[in-house]
Length: 142
Ligand code: RTP
Ligand code: MG
Image (cartoon, rainbow, N blue to C red; front, side, top):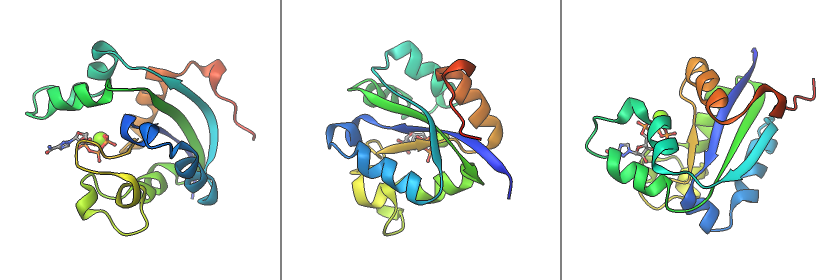
């Protein structure tokens, strides 16, 4: 399988729970390398732009409110089939439907506070990585 890059967020609920390291450990154990990482506080503009595809959805205001409720970790993950692998590690959007042992099953409370974000395609990944990181901030090990 091809080496891919994907974009990931440890959302405010998981940062508040102090499980950043546990989530990063799952990425690493699955063979994904963290090639860029930083903690940031999103504002309405940055969070709204990130989720622009959902701007017309009824949950958009709550989503932006939640994503700006505290700091997040943003990171770029690299490895074989990284996009799907990260989605598998996260589990279903609604933690009640997430498979046991996934990040959302283990750390998320609700469909709003669901612990993590992961790009849903290679195309989204490229766009989302560029939304948060410059090329100079990416540190692939080769
Ligand atoms: P994400 O983008 O955060 O990784 O999550 P996802 O792909 O699994 O889900 P997506 O459809 O992209 O939705 C983005 C976020 O919006 C919230 N959501 N709420 N109340 C609802 O019906 C609903 N649907 C989605 C979730 O917090 C989801 O992560
Ligand atoms: Mg999504």
